[in-house]
Image (cartoon, rainbow, N blue to C red):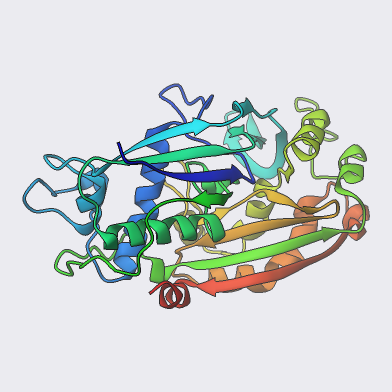
Length: 349
């Protein structure tokens, strides 16, 4: 059987959870779901039709452009995906992260504790096996989807909590410049569209080696004031020293969440219990011993994206460190890259 392979390397942990909310390997269903989500956003940005797969009316005879490739009731997906981790998956040590977020309990307010989660590995193969004819236009859009994920977004689930940043080290999918004929009769405006997205990359540079800062226990923790919680600094050391990322997505989200003062808007943008976020934040993946890069992207139509661009560098000090005396540990926070979805679409087509 003809097959095509895309080789990926994770820069932050990947998460494709099972029914028990555990992640011990990469699940094909999780990868396909993520690919489809980005493929749909791209299709909508091009003016085509992509249904909401959780409430779809597509069927064998009448279906949207996304279902044409990924399938729906009565219309099978055109490819099979096999995922193989080349060197064995390693569940990362859970680095417990104290945050400044509070949850109201009967006994009063309690600070939340976040945990890194997912798996990390050196390399994995995504094997695409065509089951029916896939047009040149569909291959082209699938390639563009992978390009967006690897350069600007993330793969898998829990991407608003730091996971899923990857690089593509090899791609043998058929390449073509042909675009799929798109059907503009079924557009759904309220779902994610690539032309509504923004993409930022920030470089966060410290004055000292990051390993030294971890060993000095300078990052935010409330364990000094709340004895029920103890930071596990050994796990911080492991995820940086062994897996090359700094688990600060929660600090970044703390920094930007309250840039929106209106509570209802804030919950709409950044999510709440039972509702997903429209803004996604990565952990800091290693640039060098003193520098990490962080991705912040999303499809919020509110001006919070402009506030993130302008104010993150001034807000992040208070959220990163456990004491103001350590603020001088941060050398600078630089906006390395800024692009909106419309400009990205123009590049892609």
